Image (cartoon, rainbow, N blue to C red):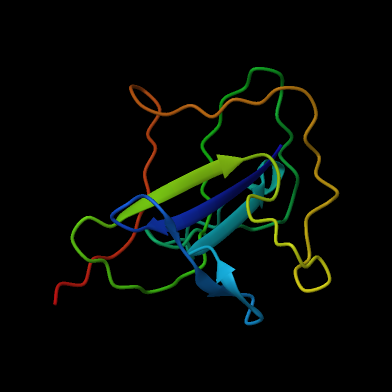
Length: 136
C-alpha cells in the first residue's frame, strides 16, 4: 500500500491558495508527504513527535484486513493564516498533486497498490496532524 498526503491552505471562500513547489512551479500545495506502508517501521531513537524517522531496513508487508499505524512526514513549511482561512488534508493512494507539466515534476507511477485499501480514523484509531502554532 502506498499513501500520499497533501496539505492545502484554503482562503475564506474555500479556494486553494497556491504555493511554490519543487522550486519550479508556483501553483503547488502547502505540503506533501508519501510513504510505502511496508516501510512504516520507525527508528524510535530518531523519531520525534513532529518528524517520523523510517528505518527502510526491511519490508513489513500488510496482510489482508490488517490495520497498522502509519506515520507520514509532511515536508516542513511555514505560512501565515488570517481569520477564516483553513487547512485541507487529502489522503489517497496515488500522487495527490498532479501538475500539468510532467517534465518538471516526477510522479510516482509505480505504486504497489492493488485491491481496496481503507484508512481508519476516530474512536479506537488515533489520527492526528502535528504542526506548530507560532503566535504573533
